[in-house]
Image (cartoon, helix red, strand yellow):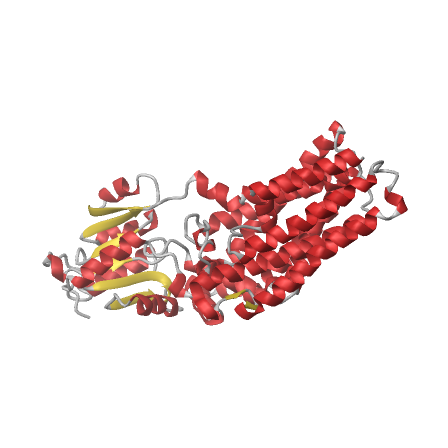
Length: 488
């Protein structure tokens, strides 16, 4: 390999700029993610039982672990979050005829896929199943190939210090505070790239606080039993809301970690913190159990039954993230159940037995909203993939059927409400029960409006979140709630 230095000599040379190879690291530098963790997450989603083999593989060394993961799962390198500032610099150097080398601790199979996709590198140095090409091993390999100070190096962490010490010049992606100042003590720093380190906004976005709006469903049993004015129950409801929100955020983090590739293909989801590389995957893996533990602990303090509902919600969410989301119809039924569990959580906390009428109403209405979600995703993906668009296991040609099933389910919820009005059992809680017919009309309008919005491609979020944020929907929901209060 010609590199402007005698391989293996270790001698210091000062070649001309165009003769000095530019060596670039992969994880955290060229891409804003950790490919080892990504491989583990893909394995967890596609072959979860094989996670039991990870300690066995690791016992034979990190290089062996990486090789076995590369053999077990295939990463989609075409959608990786490449760091554009570094990529632009490499492209410019390539045009000038400079030799570019990808040197990474990632497994060779993964590194070569990245190199082939980009078409920029003259050589690839990577872990080979025996040697983990990191820290001192990477330095020794580069010195053997190009000589001490016979290459420039692009890196992004203090762990690259040994490599930078042997490099002629450093190009630093500043992902850590004062990293460039630290590297300047080791060698000459030529360029500092903005590392775009994680900010508070990114962590807040990863928790998806706007999705907490769905958790207002825990108050539905209070509204249905006309106890919404009980301040003690309202305070208890706020605690239930908090417990559910903590568990839900934990589930959202886990879902995003397991769904990186699919999110990167989506026109909007590709900007999520983990998919875009805005937040380290390791931080998400640490936050997920902490949020879950906090939510379950709060639920246990309120009610053992509520703890059971929260645990069931999380297990169902985990099953959805791992497998159920890819099964047609089953995925939509699961989403409807997750909505309904919020209502059951409120009933469990308030010790209010849920009415069969309320449960039937929720199942039909939430099934319709879940269908809206899938329909809206198909409409969004059509702008990306055209006639070949698909969302999860649904194809573009399924849109009409989804609309028919979802619309019918929404109108069935109106029918359940109408039948409830004619039932003698509802005359006691509602003195002016005839007014609830107006709620049927408003609900019919609301369901139709939701589907019309999705059909026009304007459903940009979870349907229930959209419903609570959209002005027209807010007015209709407020009118329904006011009518129910007047009828009581």
